[in-house]
Amino acid sequence: MAVGASGGDTVITRMVADDHVPWFKKRNLRRLYLVMFPTCIGIEMTSGFDSSMMNGLQAVGSWVTFFHHPDTSILGLMSAMYSLGSICSLPFVPFVTDRLGRRLAILFGSAIMIVGAVLQMAAQNFAMFIIARFLLGFGIPFAIVAASSMIGELSYPKERARIGSLFNASWFIGAIVAAGVTLGTFSMRSTWGWRIPSVLQIGPSLLQVAFIWFLPESPRWLISKGRGEEAYAILAKYHAEGDVDSLLVKAEYAEIETALELEKESNKTGWKDLIGTSGLRKRVLIASFLGLATQWSGNGLTSYFLSKILDNVGIHDDRVKNEINLALTCWGFINATTLALTVPRMKRRTAYLIGTVSLLLIFTGWTIASARYSITKGQASSRAVIAFIFLYSPAYNIGYNALTYTFLVELFPFHVRAKGIAIFQWWGRCAGFFNQFVNPIGIQNAGWKYYISYCIFLAFEVVFVYFLFPETSGKSLEELAFLFEEKAQEQHLERVEKEIQEDTIPISPGSFDKKDDAVHVESVHKQ
Image (cartoon, rainbow, N blue to C red; front, side, top):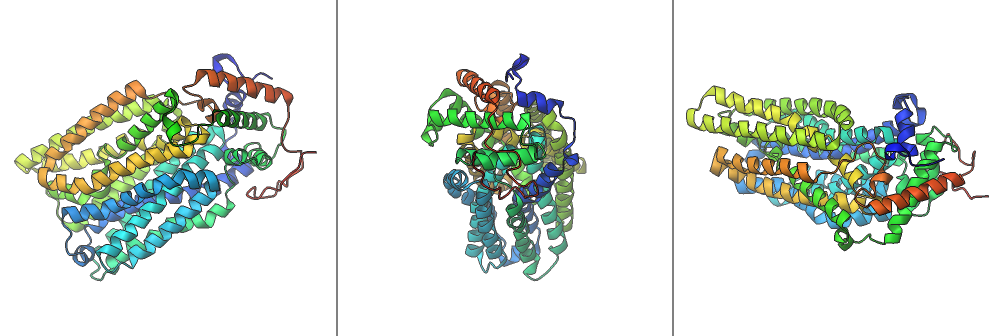
């Protein structure tokens, strides 16, 4: 059977397109997603919880009093230590993720975050609090990089984009919980007003530790480590309901194996090799841009310093601030989840262009309304700012929430995927550290004029996306492994076609128990 077809479709592309059976009617795939969701969703919940908690704590009197009314620089440092911890851990993340596997990397990061959350709750002074936040930030990249890679590599091809988008949308679940908790504790006079939200940050990490044992390892990682039998068994169990003779599974395995062989032949797996070819340089440039754009699009203002923004438009009541914070996070969850289920059906470039243009227009309106309030002090301008803040949420979520990790997993081939996502995280965390430290100073000293810098960067984003973003939708990860390398792509297709025609599989029918959880698949020897 030929792999290629008119329009460049492969066996996988055609079979997935013809599969109209929803995932919830497939027993094994349903079990996989029911384990994957709490494991991976808990990771983004941690980031969402942290942002919303730091927003809410600024309106919690006991926290403000305990830390002696932190000024703008101290407040910025408290928020930025989370990003600084991430920056310090990122050089080690690809090593752990690629050497130990996706599952153990998630477990490792979760353990560090549990320690950080406990220390944050028990903080006795400023130094202890920022060390705890550093540890929380140090652990999160291990979990995020491994989980985003695992989702793309383990999901059924038809649902890969939507599952990846839901992963990022789960940020708002943690944010809603934190906003609700701080709304409930802001009036407490004891230090438990801020210690309760702090200790609850341990919850998402406990989810990861509890469910990771029931999640199978990435088949691509297993094949890269010479454990093809286990990988094939996992693919057969979850992508073909246990049918080891499935043509889809054979094609998937052949594509993964040949792609990894070609990547291994190139022997380009080091950090310096990421700039060794034109294709990889383009990927690194796009990932670096995404890291900056996801933080420098104005979202850092509402994520960490909503209280300061509301002060600048005449809203000073702590209860009202916490109510707006909770309403904004709930609205974000609703539109992010809706967009995660719908946007992956669109072309990637189209979705990013809609998002960046919308952000530019909305943020410009936000800036103008803020300027009008500084002049007139009118309620209409104040309400307009709040309206623009709520409009901003879906505009940001169209691209930078719904597609970011999906796009990154599609952009980078397996052998540098962890490094590519780590580069995205590094630029994002550096931008986040800068924002978290500078934003409160800029808001206080420049007011609405500070927002102009974001308008300028948003205009740059529109131009960058239009000219440099490739289209990645509708293709398998192995097809996309050679997105910028046409010669290697042709060679890959030829090898896949040959392997499928030979009809060789690394596992025999009945050689693994379908009742197994597929986490520990029995080692099988070819006869």
